[in-house]
Each structure stands twice: as C-alpha cells, then as structure tokens.
Image (tube, rainbow, N blue to C red; front, side, top):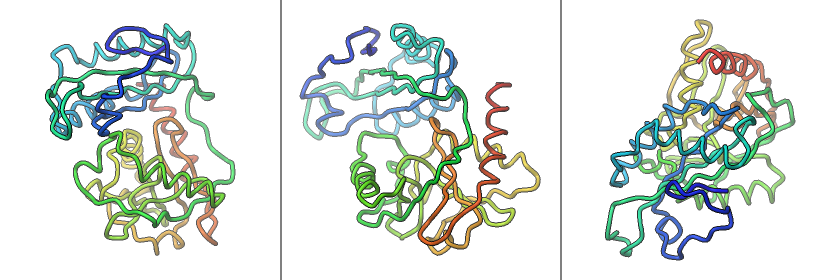
Length: 280
C-alpha cells in the first residue's frame, strides 16, 4: 500500500504517463529509515526536503509541516503493518502535471512508499566490500548536484558497471577528477587521526547520514574532521575508507584496487551512532 496525497492505494496503482517526475525527472525524494514507528533523523530529512523544494522552485503547501508529513508516513507504515518493525521509507515530491520543460504550475503532489528492512539499528558490516572508481561519467558541481532528485542516470549506469565488474560499489568523480561520493552514499577517508570528506561545493550529495557522522566525529577529541577535496591518489594511502547512508549507516570498504583497509574507525562510529539514536 502507498500513500498518494493522503489516500492509501494499492502499490500497483499507476501514475499518469504525464507525471513530471517520470517525464522530466522533476521530482525530489527522501529515503528515511523508520524503526518501530520512529523516523530516524526526521528533522534533518524534513528541512533538507524543504530547502530542496525551494531550490527547485516548487510551491510548498501550507499544510506541509514536519508534523503533517510525519503523520502521513506513520499512517502508511500502519497500513502496511510495519509500525512495529524497521522499514525503508521513500517520500517523493513531484511537480503537478502540465507543460513541457516549462511547467504550467509549481504546485506539487507527494507519494510515500515503504518496505521492511532486516536491521532495527545500525550494525558493523564485516562482509568483504570492494570498490573502484567510476570514470565513464562525471558530476558537474553545482547546487543541483547536492539534491536528491530523480535525475540519477549516472548512479544507475555506475551500478550496472559495478555489477559487471564484480564490485560492491563505485566512487564517483566530479569534473575536476576529485572523489566526491559513492554511488549510494557519502564517502569518508581516514589517514592517521584525520578523517576527510569532500565538501558539498565539490558536488556531493548533502547527505543526512553525512551530517550525523560529521557531528559524531567532531565530538571525538582524538580525531580531526576535515572537509576538503579528495584526490584518487589519496585512496591507496588511506588507513580506512567508509561509505555512509541512512539505511546502512556505515559501510566499511575492504579493498580498493590492490589496497586493503581496516575498519576500526567505522566500528567506533557505528557504536556512537547507535547511542545517539537511543538517547534522541
């Protein structure tokens, strides 16, 4: 069951072929982890969505408050018997039909879809995880590249490339040939006591989990968090590389080309992250 503008419908309900999210990628989405009726980091998701809608010049409805959208998500979880489980929530906002590239209206509709996930909180991922660079296409840094829009062609093609080459993920480069993120999350590189992550200005997604990890690192006096450009040459000199997103939490990278990595910092941050969730 999905929630389309407050209406609970069968999840095989068809959207119009004129839907602007389908026709032009004129849509934004938030992927949220829900655990037993609690939306993790919901405030951060909500304010990122509102900021993104303003950048996309979408009209924000008066009733689109944090409380209203939370109520609609919880309603959808209940209808899918997922109130007492952990779930992946996808909240999509798209501009209403009409027009070609130039829309006839800036009014919006929303769609909420949910499905269960295996883990309630975040766990240490000890499985072997190999990555490489995806160099077929590059991200051009701009304010739009920091948004979660439906324009994800690079991520789709990159994911196919990773599968064809028996990789678990790929790291994405910007047009300056700097590492900016993974196909499905932000990237952090550890060298000694310094933990680096690319700045938003380099073209990476303004990730909700990225924000949580940065705040957690900044609370640890033994580590220094630096937001700086990351060169591909730094990867093979790193002690550790990890990828972050709100569903997995932290995914430690085991191997990049011929270099293998530890996961000590990843494990420490996972522990701190789960503590943060329990006390919030």
